[in-house]
Image (tube, rainbow, N blue to C red; front, side):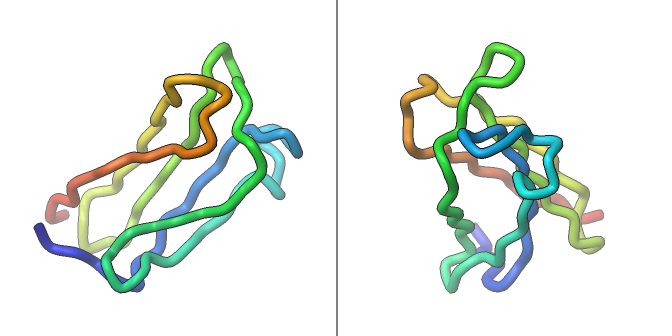
Length: 88
């Protein structure tokens, strides 16, 4: 598996502080030395019946990835998603 340290991922979530459409509920982060993205944010809460996040990766070198991972429970405090990049 190839890692991509320093690459950017975008996210949007409905949290205790706002809806996923709100500008302050969107963000971007860079991956660490292991190519992993980590975000700290307020508790994700259900929207449209499910606690979920939106994650996107779009570098131009690879096909765009857009994920909507759903949490097992609204009380979970972590959201984990793996994705594989394919050449554009």
